Image 1 (cartoon, rainbow, N blue to C red):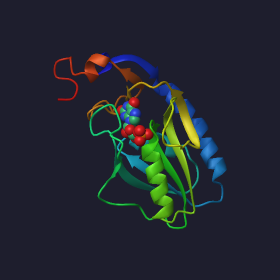
Image 2: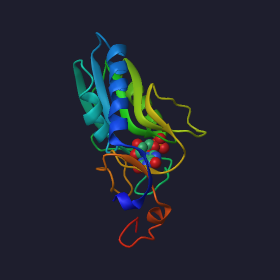
Image 3: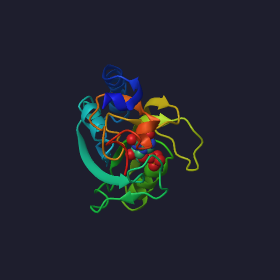
Image 4: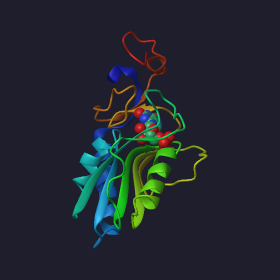
Length: 188
Ligand code: XMP
């Protein structure tokens, strides 16, 4: 799988060191509060495991499936929420965890739903990566691991056509792989 990458952006040690900092910040900001963490699947699951084990306070973990890519490398502009619907967050302080802030559509949709339909008391957002780009959707993130350029990345939970999520580092995928030019790789 390493051969499919053009270059590595963040090694595991770099990611984990940054998670130590983020976890400390999150713990400090939520002292004395009852926190529900809503993890966006599937991309947020590796971040969830490594980040939340560093957050030293009682918290509840909920999950939500959201997809807007459907196997490709660009958002289709519509966010599908999974069949299980919203977790119960009524009156709770919520932290949404996602792998990456790209167009912002996913975070904006989930945040709006958790407040308007879910009745959350307050919602903050945390992403491992934020792409530096102009966004039609105006949404920031309260906690950001790293800012990156506008290129397609995989690893550490991020996939291309379902693959590469288990890479322990984050890298930029080769164009040939995205175009499906390497045998047995890419999207049909
Ligand atoms: P939006 O555009 O809604 O994107 O902010 C959020 C979701 O899209 C996926 N995404 C990516 N997945 N490499 C990936 O593997 C990328 O560069 C990338 N950009 C966006 C991701 O699932 C994220 O939650």
